[in-house]
Figure 1: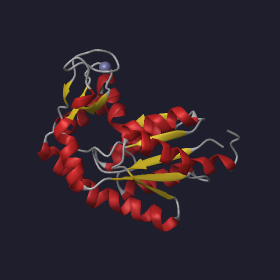
Figure 2: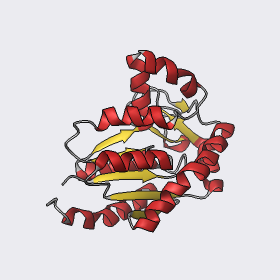
Figure 3: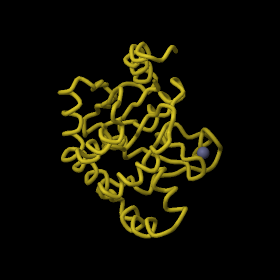
Figure 4: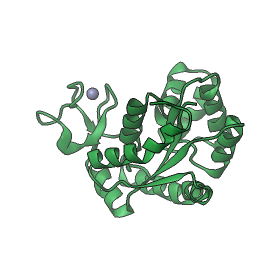
Length: 218
Ligand SMILES: [Zn+2]
């Protein structure tokens, strides 16, 4: 049985970086809801028209619409996956539970970083407009180029502090209850994500190691 993992954490806690690494290590699909919504936008059509203004102001798509989009993504998917950005609310978590019956997720990973540290990260965060690499300003090469593809990279459009504070508030109101629920049910892996990216990655790999024992021989 393929692994099904969800990543929970506040904005700028490193979900994208760690999610991609886990997916690579374990042969899973990585899904960022941000990237998925951008694809929906690019494809055009009525759904794109409805979500465009919400995304333009850095807001979140309502639960119903988000669950429909996720249902499309999950449909017919055979292998395992790591979800980044979903479920973001209890309603979305309910949807996912129902969609996965009779199984469920194998683990929910909570990346924990205090608000002050997140604010510090937001101030220095940059993104490549070409390959979507994102990281801190000091990781850019030759005074401002993407370390992955060499395109000039800059500050992320959605990274202003006001937007972060709004998203953090949304996280506290809607996502913390999802984390608490998984903690109560024993499916939560807590991770101190203030540490170096490599250390967080190694520690997560170790936490996820036992999950291979039930079914998957890797
Ligand atoms: Zn790039």
